[in-house]
Length: 185
Image (tube, rainbow, N blue to C red; front, side, top):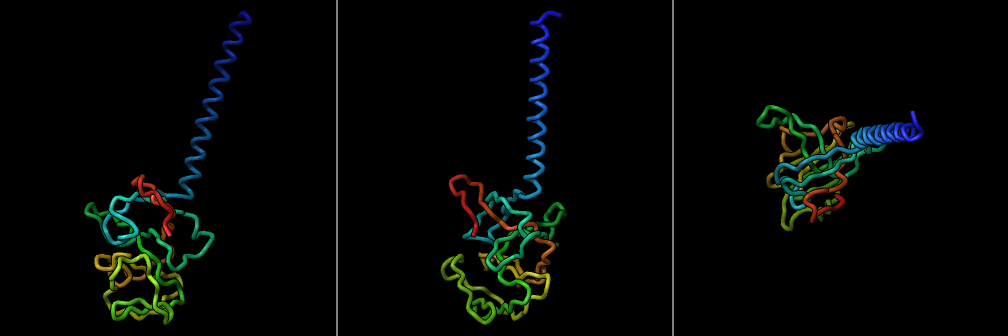
């Protein structure tokens, strides 16, 4: 074997090693990314005007493993509601009350710990129907959609209080549509 052939063989080996490294790194990155974030597609109008049908969201899956849910966070959680295909729905709602909070809804207004909640994220003139007077128990969350007229949320028995363990994560970013990319607060 000549020197030229040895160099070519070594070059092929080096190329294969580089491709294996790149492929391995891609697999590790994909694994790490899926550990921490999850893509989610919005279905329905219950979070208008904050989120719209078919918005593509990125949620932080690890945030509540190291921290606690906070009032005002927009979250994705597992529910017992079923889709047409028989699988359960993930819902997107806003946390209004955490463990120990007193949530009262009366005369179309929401009160948190006896103070009127300043809900600047709602459409102008939006009222919250239903009468609620509850202290949120340990391990539970009281959630509402931003579009109160169509939202199925903690006011209704079908959803009720959300178990903290059912929270999949906090919504971080609206990634699509591209002309509306934004952080979700």
